[in-house]
Length: 417
Image (cartoon, rainbow, N blue to C red):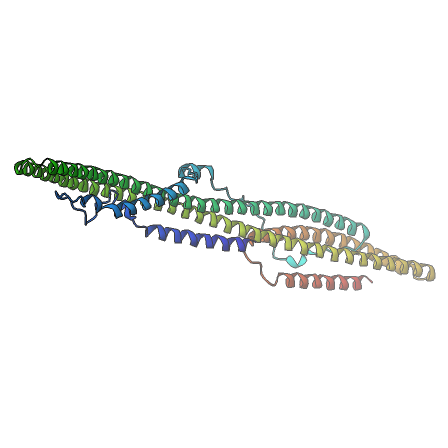
């Protein structure tokens, strides 16, 4: 599960990098570069009476109307998506805190005689006490296993929350791109409206000139009056040309200002994208730490299962020793009834048996202490190897130690008999 999430996060990281490169290659649209739209090159203002000057700009105005309709449709699409400030979105989605470490801070000294960690018993009372203690230890380990499983489930839930927050960051980047596109389209439409107003003013002036021409032709009073009208028209044409030149200068100034604003917006978006990428890196580090903790918990579960198997083997061996002791007691009773001549020898053997039992009791106490020390050593080794690979020959080492212990018990039993 952690591997699939890591691969998904890596793919999302590559997608964020592609978005950064794509935004770095953005260019200024034509409407933003030339918001006022200069008059067509074939547009001329003349003083002739044909009236062709007002018709030269008809095709260009039709094209501008189609561009306005397309900009309106794009503007409606962009306005249908609600926008949210970036700073507010980052405040509402803070990154989660990492899981607390489950490793214990207390460590005990390591004992090298791990082969003596498995105890032996020679009578019923010691075997029962040892089995009860083993059962209590198994219950305690089972409770610890339940707590570890709860922590694993919590870490999986936090990984799911991190994935949802990464998806939210991707959606926010898309919304920021739509906002930039909408701002560019608004600037283009504003420039287009200003150009339309200028064209309308020129058409009105041309209509006025045409009306004056018709009036001069109808009156036809004198050539002097007609010459004065032409001079007036030429003066008006010069004024219009100067007005057009001023508008072109203003258009260039507005174009430069729009370009500066666009560059500032691109820089802000790149900064925000870098912040998003850094936050995604932090989320990936948190996910890796959670995966390491889960691996350590799995190792602890494996060792608990191994201890359960060892406890079952010890219980079976204790039962075998109990049966053997019962058989030996029956044999001694039969010999007491059958052979009365060997009482002195039997008493000596009884005394020897008592001494052996005292030795066995002392050895049992020592073995019990060794068992407790070995269990603490195992827990210490588990704490040391958490997050790392255990040695591959651990099971082989424990099995050989258990076989060595069985041989020692068998030779001790032969010496007693």
